[in-house]
Length: 272
Image 1 (cartoon, one colour):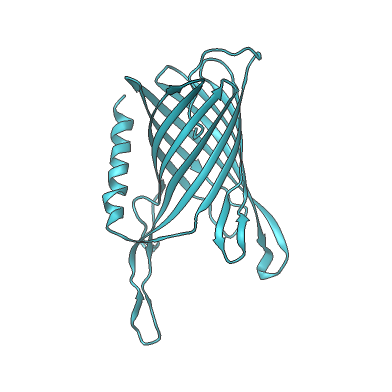
Image 2 (tube, one colour):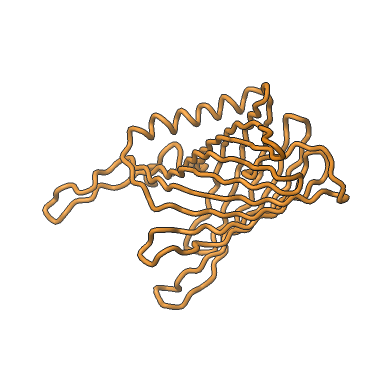
C-alpha cells in the first residue's frame, strides 16, 4: 500500500510527459499568481488554512488585469507520520457581462475537495504524494459541474543558511476529469486534461513567517477540430493540442500556533 502513490504518480508523469512532447502546442501570456496564507497550527502537524489568491493576466490588449479573486479554507489531519487527509473549500469570484450587454454580474464558482496525502522521508529528502477529488459548482447555470481528480508528486529538502531555512522543491501535478458512463456521442477527450510542473524556493524566516517564490508551466491537454479557409485549405490541423501557460507566483504565509506558544511540528510547503 505504501508504494501505491509513488507508482501512480510516476505513471501520471510518464503519460503526460513523452506523449505531450509529441503534440502541437501554443504558449500563452504569463500569469501572475500572488497568494496570502494564514495557517493555524492545531496539534502536531494538523492545521487549518485560509488563503487568498489574486490571479493576474499579463500581455492582454487592455494591459495587465486581475482575472479573479480566489478564497480557500482547508483542514488537514495527520493520522501517522506518513498518512494524512483533509478537505478544502475553494471559491473563485469573477465578473462577467450579462447576456452580451455592458452590465457586469459577479459570479462565484465553488469547489469542495477531499484529499489524502502520503509523506515519506529518505535521508534529507521529503517525498510526498497527494491525491484529491473535487467537484466544481459553477455559478453560470448554463455550465455543467464536473468532477476532477488531482494527483501530485513533490520532493524537497530543508537547507539551513545562516538564520534562514531554505526549502528548494520540485512538484508535478496531473489532473483529469472523472468521466462516468461517458456517451459515445460526446466529444473525444485526452486521458489527462491538465498538468502543472512547478519549481519553488521556500524561505523560512521564522516559525511564524515564510515566503515562497515559484515558477510553473501549466498545460491544458485538448483535442481541437480542423479549421480550413474559404478554399478548403487546412489552416489549423485537427487533433491533439497543448496550451501552455507560464506562471510566476509568490506565496506569503503567516503561522499562528494554538495556545500562542510555539511547538515542534513538520510544516508542509505553501503549496498545500
